[in-house]
Image (cartoon, rainbow, N blue to C red):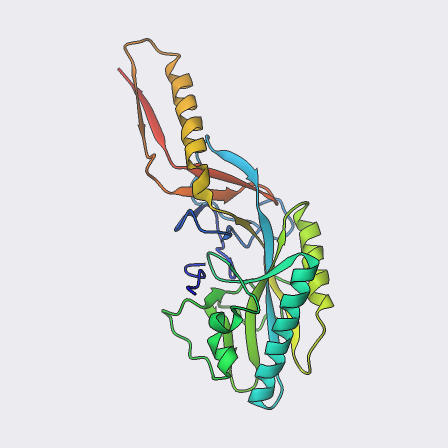
Length: 274
């Protein structure tokens, strides 16, 4: 099975708007930060978004978690982390959550695929970090549960063992049906519900993020809105004027505009010419 965790929020892309690398992919991470005016700090938006687009609720919310064990024996550390991962997978399915992995596009972790997603953990060998490896994420350290040991925001592998501690980096995803604070509380309660296994424990890391499913599906709707807006603007001029629209072949992009909502758009331009 191919991993879909190529180019992926865990971790998460820190700024918006986000450009679609694969607009048909499921569960694309939008951002790991909140907007200016919210309690968790500002998001820097480099370019103003177009006026025309679609405002919609995000599909789900997710948060980084780590399962760690510092047992003295290397094999024991991995067994404890594996056992806690499988317990979390089972509990997530029963409680309406998903355990996922990836950096730009998230893939659900199941009992059927976890060994393929984390082969080093499955076979118990040490993980050698490779910059070209898909299985890494950028960790956001803005969280009260974080020990703030690392300040450099460097990419970290999803699984690693440094000789004294085994770490598995994942995300917990929940359907976004209310506020982001409610989702945060729900995920926090789920993480606390997973019992420790030996020396293994699960901790939340970083801020909440949102996801959008297949943003490319909104292209035709956005085209229609752009066309209607351009025709309306042209209606104020005489019949000797023509309309030129460009940029419709640009990627579908998305930007967080509230704690739970996204603005989906295409960077277009139109001009009225005589």
